[in-house]
Amino acid sequence: MRCRFSLLTLGLAPWLGAVTQGAEAQAAWRDTHCYHHDEPGRTLSFPLPAAHALDLRRSTDPSDVDGSECTASVRDREGSVIWRAAGFGAGLDPWTGHDVDGDGLPDAMVTVDRGGGNRCCWHVHVLRLGTAPVTVDTLDPNVFFRADEGGRTVLWDIVPFYELGPDMADAPLARLARQYRGGRLVDVTAERCPTMLADTARDLTTLRAEWDEATPDLRSAARRGADTAWAVIRAHVAVSSLALQHLACGLREAARELVFEAWPPADAPERWRTLVSAWERVAARRFLAPTPPTP
Image (cartoon, rainbow, N blue to C red; front, top):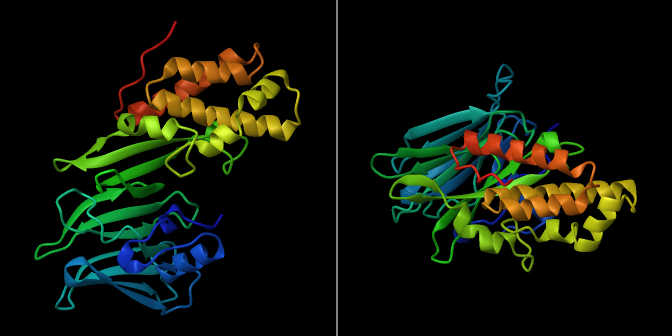
């Protein structure tokens, strides 16, 4: 499956202009990315902080296949290439120009696709550009960026649970928030939970869409099996996402209540154990503290 649309298209830095939704957003994505389907030799260039520049080039060499079709090259103010990476695709992340690592200086964000476009593998390289360029970090796929109340960058991770959904596209997910503090990338999910769990705002950092598909009436209908099969599936996916997010926020009992409101009594205990197990695997992999057990 090739890439349809990426989280990387969400929210351009002011100096790049705004990105809109739908077809215009996909066009904006193409305007800032090289992809393996592009015409050989197609080249895009962009200004970067500290008088540097980024070149994205589709190779003209037919032997460049399987991850070397697109090259991202960063040039310094003298025009010398100081950083390069290749992949199936490469691009300029729209958060470029913001201070990502919290040192007070704008950073460059270059994306490289290592997986052929299946939404799994667009790694984000955070570059601090100056007299001695530094790769601050290489971030996992499915990350996007927002500013907090003080204007500092928050890194949001979308964590899909493919094994818990009817298919890959409809898998439940949880959102985790991180931020650079004192030179370290730390988990700040708990600080964002009150806003994230609210059902009053619609944004990628909140769960309004999930609440809309898991209202008390819909949860009750799913528990009774009183609605169409697809409606029940959608309610179960939404409740699974809400429960996983409550677990991520340390609200284990609230997560359990949601599950038992949406599954028949005979099925709810097993679904609850499955969700807890899935979350604990993610918590262990990310070195997050597991939520305390409940009887």
